[in-house]
Image (cartoon, rainbow, N blue to C red):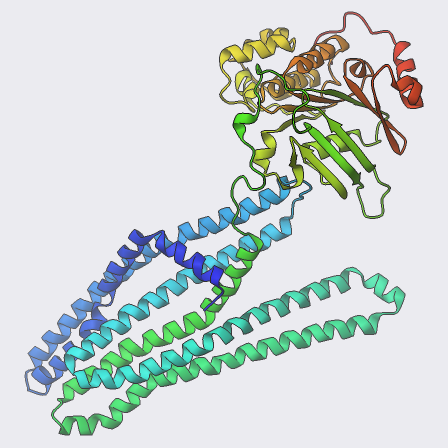
Length: 592
C-alpha cells in the first residue's frame, strides 16, 4: 500500500499496542455477532416458522436476531473506546516527533524557526490520526464482518459459501493489484497541488517585478502549465475510482447475482427457501457492506494516510537525542577539577570562518582562524557593532558560519546536538535571564545536583554575598522584575560559574556591574578550571586576559595586552582613553 517507511511505522505502532489491539479485536467479535448469526436465524425463522405455518416460532427466531443486534450495538460502543487507545498514542508520537524536529532545527548551529513548516506538519499529523483511525476501523470491520458472514454461510450451506467466496477473492485481488498505482497517483496529485500553490504565491508576491519586466505572458504560461498538471493529476486519480467500482462489482454484487439466478436450481436440488434467503442476508448485510467499506476506506483515506505519513517521515526522520559525535560527560571537568592546558585538542578552534547577515551583506567576519588552548583566558574588544557578539554566537553554536568550521574540544559545533553542546560551553549574554522562584533554584539551573556547599562557595567567589544577604538567603523567593540589571547579571554569573561546561563565554555579561565587582567576577572565572572568553565592554577586562582579540575595521588582531599597543591603533586608542578615565569611588555593588 505504501512506502517501506510507512509500513514499518504503522506496524511498529500496532505492535507497540498489542494489548489495546486485543481488546479492540475482542469487542469487534462482539460487534460482529449479528453478521455471524443473521443468515442462520433468518433461515430458521422462514423454514421453521413462517413457511411451516408457525408464526410465533418465526417471530421468536427474529427476536433472537434482534437480541444479537443489541449485543452488537454494545460491542460497537466499546469498539470506539478501544480505538482511541490505539490511535491517540500514535498521534502523540507523531506530534512529539514533529515538535522534536522543529526544536532541533531551531537550536542546532545556524538553525532558525520555521513556523510555516511546523503548522503544515501538525496539520498533517491530524490527517494521519483521522485516516489511521478510519483505516483501522474499516480493515477491522472487514475482517470480522466478512469473516463472520463466511462462517455463517459455511454453517448454513458449504456450497453457497464457496460460490460467494470466489468472486469476493477476485474483487479483492483486483483492488490490491491497483493499490500501488493509486498511491502513486495520489502522491502526484498532492505534489502537483503544492507546486501550483508555490508558483502562484511567487507570482503574486513579485507581480510588480513581473509587470516591470514585461514578463506577464511568461508567468501566465508557467502557472498555466501548473494548472494543467494538477488537472491531469486530478483526472487520473478520479479514473482510479473505476478500479474501485470494478472490485466492488466483482466481490460485492456478483455473488448477489449468482445467488438470485441460481435460486430456482438450488431449491430444486434440496436447499430450502430459508437457506437461500439466509445466504442473501449474509451477502447483502455482511459481505457487501464490509467490502464496500474497506475498498472505499483504503482507496480514499488509506491513500491520504500513506502519502501524508510519508511526508511526515521524510520531514522528521528519526533521530537520537544526542546525535553527532559522542561527548563523554565524564570527560567534562566540573568546578573544582584541575584545569588542563595544552591538551590534545584546542578548547576552541575556528578555521577560515566567514560570516555575514545576508547573501549580499558585507562580511562581519572574513576568513578568521583562531585557536584557544584549554584553560586559556581570551578577551575580545573593539568598537560596538564590529562583530564581537557574532563571534561569541559562533563559538557557542548559536550561529553557523557561511564558510569555515568551528570546533569545541575537537568536535565540530555544526553537528553537535543541543545536549552535547550544552555540556561543552555556557554562554552568558548581556541581558541576563532570571526566573521567578528561589535564588537557589536560579543558581542551580545549569547544575541541578549542586549542593549547598557548592552554592555558598560560588556566591563567595563571585562577590555575591551582599546580594544574597539583601534578598534574604539562598532559599528566598525572588521577583526578577524587582532586581536591577546588575543584580540579574550577578545571578547569571554565579549560575554559569556552577555549570559543568569547561568553556564559559561572557558576552558583555558584566556591563551593568561596577568595575570592582566586574574584576571580582572575571578573576573568579579566570581561576575556575576551564577556558574563558570575555567579550569586554571595558578595556580593564583585557588587562586580566592571557590574550586579547581586537576587532579593528575589517580585520582582527590577536596578541597580549603588552604587545597590542604597538600593533593595533584601535587597541592603543582604547587603552589611552581608559587610562584617562577615573573610576568613581563608592559605586554601589551590583551596579545600577
